[in-house]
Length: 110
Image 1 (cartoon, one colour):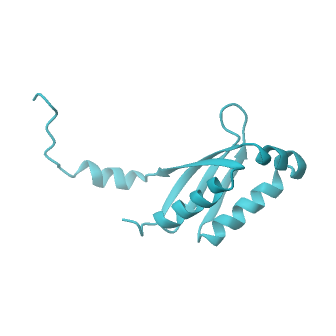
Image 2: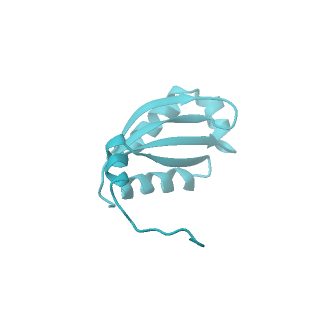
Image 3: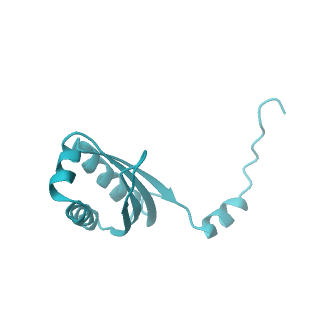
C-alpha cells in the first residue's frame, strides 16, 4: 500500500517567519520553492492557489507513493514556517472497488 501513486489535496497556512517571507518574496517565489521540494520527492505540483480565510494556500500534488508524500509533509512542517496538511484524493474507480468488498461488519448492539 505504501507504493501506490496518489494525488493529494494540500492545505497550508503560513506561520511566524513564513508570513514574513511571503510578504518579502511575494507569491510566485514560494510556489517555485514548493514545486522544487515536490519534484525532489518525486512528485508534481498541479494547481497552486492562494486563498484567504482559514487557508492560505491550497492545491493538488501528484506523488509517486505514500512515503514520499509523508517525507514532503514532514520536511515542510519541520520548517516551522508553514503548517501543511495532505488529504489523499480517491479516484471513483477505487470507490467502485471498495464498494464491492464485503467485510462482514456488524454495528454494536445488532
